[in-house]
Length: 119
Length: 110
Image 1: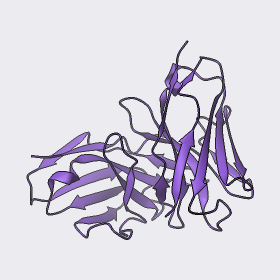
Image 2: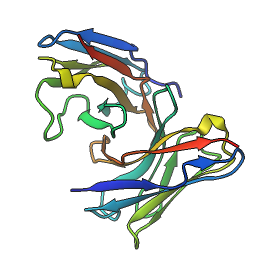
Image 3: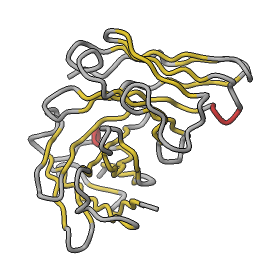
């Protein structure tokens, strides 16, 4: 059974960089046809797609975050990562790592990692 | 890109049916058959209930169904059960490798 697990700090200071890693088990990030990505949910708000990455390194980002976000993939260690720079309190959210299935649905989700931006 | 529009809340009694709408534009919901629905119990990971407008992933009860007309997609839950009480989110492909979500609907089983 495929499992995704986020890891990273729960507290980031304003203007710093938020960095999270998603470790994939029970499957491979090299699987053809599947994209890996990140979705977040700010307190009291809905879900927001951040971006997706393929095992070749091809990336796609939400235009509203594109200037601050970078996704990367490490096929050797079977994980992928999110970097979001110049964070503000508005970036406080639960960050989920996800797999996008071949029908374009997000079919596997991590448990979520709450990241609070505060000094 | 604006979020898709969902009603903030919906409710029905056990055994009844409820339909949740998700309204977008011709650039997302209306333009592609890549609408999906997610059930989210707070504190847990969201779970996909419907993909590609009306396909049920393995393990999802047939009480859950999806449809689309024009720029509006709908999720219908029939034979409501207590465990169906959750937040439901729609999502759609919006072109140029971009995905957009709805604001979410809190479903209450009365």
